[in-house]
Image 1 (cartoon, helix red, strand yellow):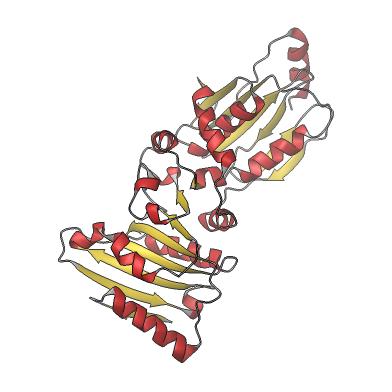
Image 2 (tube, one colour):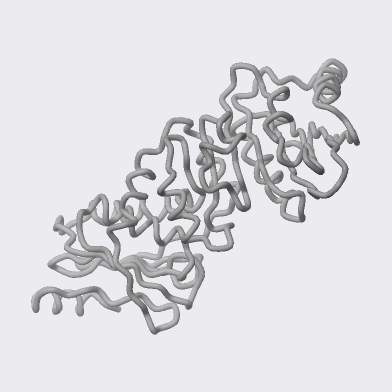
Length: 333
């Protein structure tokens, strides 16, 4: 059910919510958090709401959408309430703010927050340079941005790394979960040798590739080369150099990866690119600071750059000794 309230107030919206609960049995008592979505009022807004509806089936919540409309229009709030099948396991309140009110999202949101419930703020498109100092970000325990949605993703990631505050996170980081799990699992298999270096290859403007390289540099304490390629979207491959040969995880098509390492059979692994709903579900599972993400941001300054002429091909592993060269050569397909 969708109820439109044009040219309304937050008081009228709250009154209507109470009326809906009394008449239809919709309650907010089971909501575990308030999710505030901040975005422009454009064609992509519904995609963000749909992702939040899907995530609410695992994390029942009140979703407040702050949709910024035309700044030159007369000041007004067009409200909309969605419940039932149009809101997943949540209740969705859409606030379309026009004119000077477009910059007053905090004042419009505060009266609609659930009492004593954690607040998560999500910018599915372009977000603030410093989320913790944004008026809406100041209300939240967790602040979710997406560097991949910015005009210059890598620059946006670098800017947020400098402004990091506990509670910040990025969907570009969440998209790495499967990659990190596979790499850690591969190193748990024999031979149990120290990694001497790593190469991460990916799209030139992929913030996830940058974060993966930073994570490896910070936790493995080895030189990490970040190779830029135009052959495929996102991350293409990761190579971890060891004395007996390289561990290589290669995903040229954005869907299926191939894991190769000495002494082990070649494995095909599902590594399809994760959508916003999947990433949002994962982020809402924890409301405490993500220390691993913070540490990986510190690792961004430790990676070196390189180029790869082959479209979609993994970069060659750096070889530091004749024995390692022979082992690495034998491990290639």
